[in-house]
Length: 76
Ligand SMILES: [Zn+2]
Image 1 (cartoon, rainbow, N blue to C red):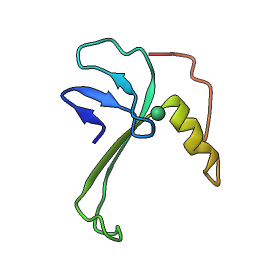
Image 2 (image 1 turned 30 degrees about the vertical axis):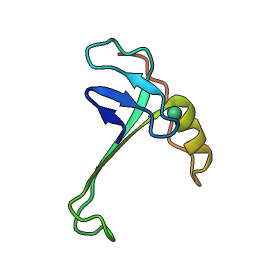
Image 3 (image 1 turned 60 degrees about the vertical axis):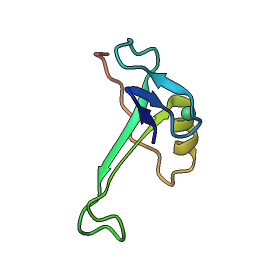
Image 4 (image 1 turned 180 degrees about the horizontal axis):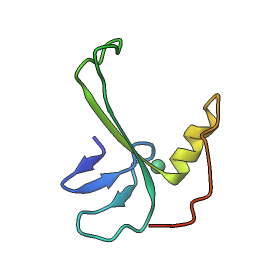
């Protein structure tokens, strides 16, 4: 569980990413997946995890194919 009382923690290293009501000081990745009928053993389960940028970089290095990447001109 990486979210407790509005606070988000990185699932990879455990550091706090943001607190409810506080402006975000760091950017991070959130993955949400509602597993459906064709999953092997997660039917009807909702999974969510958050990763800081460093843990994201570590994850990406383990991937067989690198993520698609493009320049975004408008930053929000
Ligand atoms: Zn992390």
